[in-house]
Amino acid sequence: MGAIASEDLINRLADWGVDTVFGLPGDGINGLMEGLRRCSDRVQFLLVQHEEAAAFMACGYAKATGRLGVCLATSGPGAVHLMNGLYDAKLDHVPVLAITGMQETQMLGTGYQQEVATDRLFLDVAEYNQVVMVPAQLPTLVDIAVRHALTRRGVAHLTIPNDVQIAPAGEAPFAAVGPATNISTAPVYLPAPGLPRQEHLQAAADVLNAGNRPVMLVGAGALHARSEVLALAEALGSPVVKTLPGKAVVPDDHPLTTGGIGLLGTRPSEEALEECDTLFMVGTNFPYTKFLPASGQAHVVQVEQDPVRAGNRIATEVPLVGDAKETLAALLPLVGRREDRSFLIGAQASMVKWRERMAALESADSNPIQPQRLMKAVDRAAADDAVLTCDSGTIATWAARDFDIKGSRQFYLSGNLATMAPGLPYAIGMQHGFPGRQVIAFVGDGGFAMLMAELATAARYHLPIKVVICNNAELGQIQWEQMVLGYPEFGVRFQRRNDFAPWAASCGFLAKRVDDVGELDTSIKDALNHDGPALLDVTVNADEPPMPGKVTYEQAKKFAKAFLSGQPRKATIATTLFKDKIRELRA
Image (cartoon, rainbow, N blue to C red; front, side, top):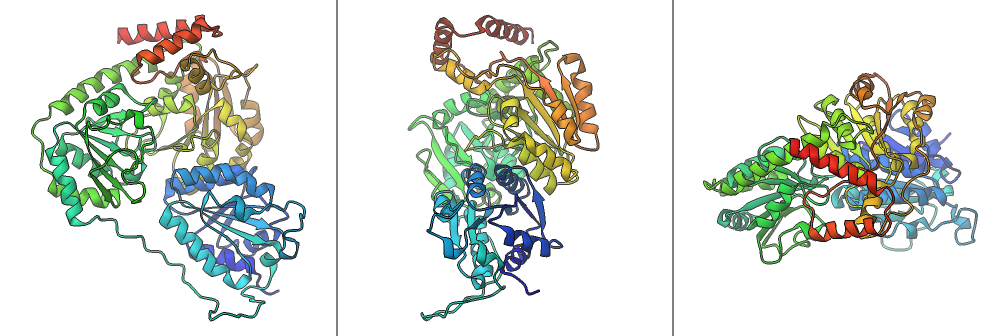
């Protein structure tokens, strides 16, 4: 039996170092599946339950490992299902290659079953988007697609008609009529230089040296530059404020950091940005501009790999284009040590009070279980190299504030798309990439229910992920957003609390539902120490609000308006807020 075109595709992926494809079979990719079967000694096919999860797994794998993530789906509905996970990769600047099927070439344009113009469907999400027309071009198109994904930190897409998939490898059935021939490229990629020009570095140093109240705002682009960030912050006497995707840049207990920023952040971080006269943004394109310094307040320097994104959130005097680690290392000798540490000392004093406040809320031994108490119990029991994945919603607030980065811990969520449901498939993709590490999915019941079938995927491949469900039987983030707008909640509470433990047990997980705080710590330790997959479904207080670090008068007024306009359960919400305040005062 001769080689088919799909073998060329899979072998070329292997040449690029790809060892896993996340996907789901379909009749639009039977040829590609045969290619995977024939090349299974080089590339593993990881079968999922839903194509959306395949895209999330590829995205999570790429986020955590820094390698190219690859997902596969059939034509039509399978390709459509990939889109949410691919937009997550696009918006968080993660290299992912999506491969989809297409109807055979003689049927295109006839309205054949499942015919979707996947090349047009992917126009917005993909940096590179191409239909493979003849087998001979496959290796070169794979090379180009991979380079686009790696260079532009985004999605590349190849869609391959059914008949091309099974055609003889290397076939070029049509005569060339132009002055060109089928090109042969190599699976080689060298990243662009990561160092700005010396005059730009000096200009940045001049701005930073002239400031009196500097703040560093660091994001996901600085995750590999911890020592350089801390060295610059120490020299500048600067607090380090972290975006949520950049939570793992520096340890949460380090004296230089004031934690996160935004609605999920800390009061000391918000105050530092309100008072700074110099802002140094490193590896972040922070979109919530309400929390950045007011116009004209601060001189701004930014380190950003993409020259298009550099300076597009705030007026920036020196937009340095380069890699965070290399740029900070080159900048450090040009920055003098600031002797006046008063601004930093003030931020550190505020952070001591903030940590005391958070500790009071985390230590509540009451029923129903406080979500902060749950997250802190996971934090205390987790390994120093644990990887925590998280969904979007109130769950992200508890993870942001109550899970501490220490050692080599990593933290991932959907940063810019902020979609629900990636926590579980992220954990599967990351556990596959890091087989020896503890990987924990900390998810809400709303997001978990969307892709809960992927528990079967984890069990199928013996991936020892740990899943902790913060089960409040509601879409909590939307509830509190409605109230802050002055509206009573509507359509956010589920009529009954789902019990997820039996489903997990049926998949082969160690599974338990926890309703009593007295069982919490032991249950978490047992789950994390289990040598296979484990799930805890924890009933938490649905009336615990994810309060912003600094409550504004306008927010308080709208909250009160919601109460006066018929907010359900306002008595229990008020009681929860009162108990929280008592705990803070006692601390």
